Length: 293
Ligand code: HEM
Ligand SMILES: N[C@@H](CC(=O)c1ccccc1NC=O)C(=O)O
Figure (cartoon, rainbow, N blue to C red):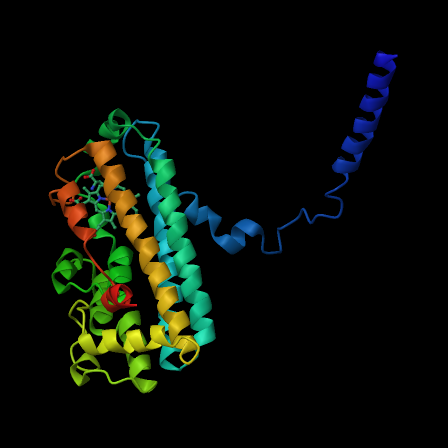
């Protein structure tokens, strides 16, 4: 009896298997004259760009972790450049959508540390001698992200002086108003009194807290319904900065877990340098005002 049941079940599942076999019926199979998935995505280039230098199994993880991070950085920069254009044009809803996307990408990069943290100190020690003086410190896309968010530092351009395209891009970004500078210009255009020196001139300096800006954001937070768009903008920026802080924290804790307090391959003190970066505040007034609400 029970074997009969089994038989019937098998028969049924075989039938289902047959159905599954045909599920792809009609799929195009010949791409000799048509663009395929791999063609569209340039997979021949992306999937042949992993060149481990050590004989160690774990180097593939290290390479792919960084390559995928650079792709996400590329998308973040693409979105933030459009955010800036939209803010300048007063088109806030599309800017909100893009800012939300950037914060979610940053969250994804925060969680990506879980994958890298599966690499133990001995595993990394086997790879590290093959990295030479290379380091994330030299990531021009990361530096551009810091700059577009207002954490400017002209001295950090030096590392790119022998790589002309990256140098030019960073030099240009250094001189442009950041996304946060654009937000402050919006405050001014909405009628808030912003100190004139905060609205013009040298954009190459890192963001510092300004009393007039803080007073303006306070005005927004004290009457959200009257200034809804600015309120929404402020909260989107706070979301993004919060995700970025988590990323910095996961970086320094993962680095400490893997290399302890060794000097970095890029020449900095390592963990103590990365710990200092935890003090960076991208949008200072947006955090400072909270004490006063
Ligand atoms: C085993 C994993 C990692 C270790 C041991 C490590 C270590 C370090 C160290 C020591 C520094 C300081 C600069 C130096 O002297 O080299 C640094 C900077 C940096 N790393 Fe990593 N890192 C790791 C993974 C990553 C990953 C996955 C990324 C993602 C793209 C990354 C991005 C960066 C960036 C952007 C900087 C510059 C930070 C700044 O200037 O504020 N790192 N890293
Ligand atoms: N700075 C790291 C090396 C490192 O992590 C790294 C090396 C080459 C390419 C990307 C890297 N990732 C981030 O810094 C170290 O000191 O071990």
